[in-house]
Image (tube, rainbow, N blue to C red):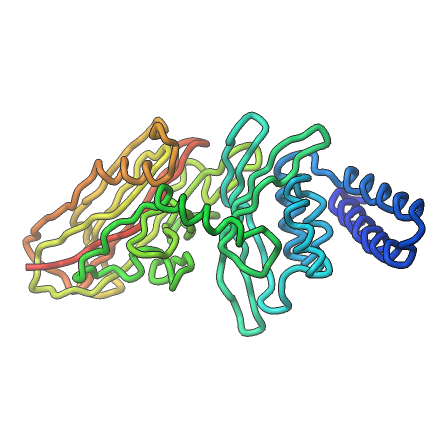
Length: 376
């Protein structure tokens, strides 16, 4: 029997006995010994189901959300969080979520240590309906260790209806802290030629309008996280590459040493010869990150390399004292300015290519708010 099959059967057994316990409690309410025996049985099953690693806690919870299984979600929560959320689970009869939209798939996209025995994970849930995709949403989980294993102590989510999370109680705290976390920036100039410069459609992260051109597996992906630059009330979105973190390479999008490329072709007035470029960016290690602008007489090329308005190399990770993402964005983006060049001739089409080569296991690069224009 494989590990996954065993875990699945253990989960099924736990849920069946928890439901049976609930039925026995109702049927034999007057029989105190039976009630206590069943409670003890459920308690021991929950202990046996206790995750042995923080990632196991996250995986079990996320799988239970996808399966709409409230009992399995409840089993990996900390005692305090169980107490806070038990009434919500009971009101739902332990069946969470909705029949539509449903969770199509999920992924762990971020991980960081908060303390020696406490970690924070970022998950993305992709929803679907019978009509097709229904958006991607971010959930933050805090996992802490106690003598019996690892348990979820905090759930922060912008999603309503998929799972109990005490979200109503969190809203005031979230609103109060959002100003400290967000990176609000000015809107881009109206003459920007780039389609989807913030890497989003509506309020969801997306690479629409861009061409992902990384050779081999992996490459650029769209992400959404509090702290990414945003010109409005939408949680900040960006395009990112990362070699992943930890033994599981959490958040991986591309291997070290690969030239990950993302480009867009824009039309312009060939009578105009002055080009301008700027963007928001943040990095871990990168060697190099560069932007190359090509010109062509057709949207299919051939292309002539014209200009490199952005070129950066960082072999050491720089972290602000606050360790907050918005401060990282502000630091790196402040080191580059609007770049301008006037060409000998203009072109009817330009190819704006953004590429990055991550040198090691600490490699990472995120970009957003891409601005490119052609003017007199």
